[in-house]
Length: 468
Image (cartoon, rainbow, N blue to C red):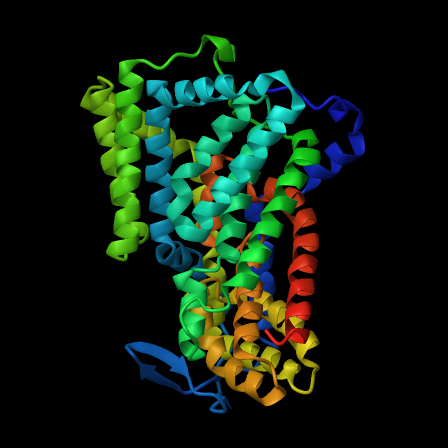
């Protein structure tokens, strides 16, 4: 069903550039070396911190340089890699377990049958218009999950997007862009994210999720831009897929058996339990991984697999995502170097000082850029809020910027960069599960990020002049 792009063979220049793009392991190691070298230039420093409501917060104006710090030994550069893998172990394990789960699902044939029947009902194979309709609906559905559920909590849904793309005659790149892009943008610009907006507004002493209208407008407009980009550009991109996902038969021949319905019911029950735990019990990666493992076992036995067969399928699925998992571990070594050199607070202080004396509208845009830079070093949104917002909220008061606008600037800078920086473990985990490498992902997602940033900056500037 996957149709090659009609101009793929003629675009030799693009193929040569694509093949010469560094392997993701090489790319991230280069970033790691660059960060290590920066630690010899950036002085060590730290803010004083206090505990408020059980959380550590920076005390504004307390920054001090640390004297007589020894530079990191060359050996620390390589020691940071296994330490980073240990720190990122929860992301590695969820990739392995989720890979096993979806390989078990694939072996039952239930997921393919569900997608095939649904695509046939819509008439996906009949016209470009209907194909584009499925892409737009899929992108917004994934965006909704990103808004309501979060980022990493939706990792289980990424392979479904790949199957949907296959059913409409597209490559896995389309499915991954639809799923990962939709989830990423939904989470980045969510009006109701407790992880970023909730923490930042709490520090800024604002009502929880207040000012949601601007963020809702941003997320809807950004998802619309992503949908159009996928329909007009991504579906035509050349993609070298070593393991292409193809529907095994024409859409008209797909049927749902009782066994398929039972497998689907188990899968949806597992997702329901997962969402219940996320919202009511504060579950995160470890609990989600446990649910995935339970789902794989129950689905495998319900499909008639023996224990040995189930283990074999799980191992096959885990093996297929090993390279992506290792990329996550390598990327996690970057914050290790920065923490050991004690330069994170220095970077935050230096970047924050840039805002002083700027017009409010310009300061809002520059804040989002600064937060994007900081996000490379502190990829956790809630941790970044705890570190930077105690500094930026008083600064907002000094320059006449509303605290609400400062929170939005923080959210844009923190959230959108997750889609392309090498330290965003959740996005890398999703790419690993979708079997699209980081090197393949960058040329796809970067071109659409520029207009999305311009959109968000324009709305922020307008909001600043409207007294938001």
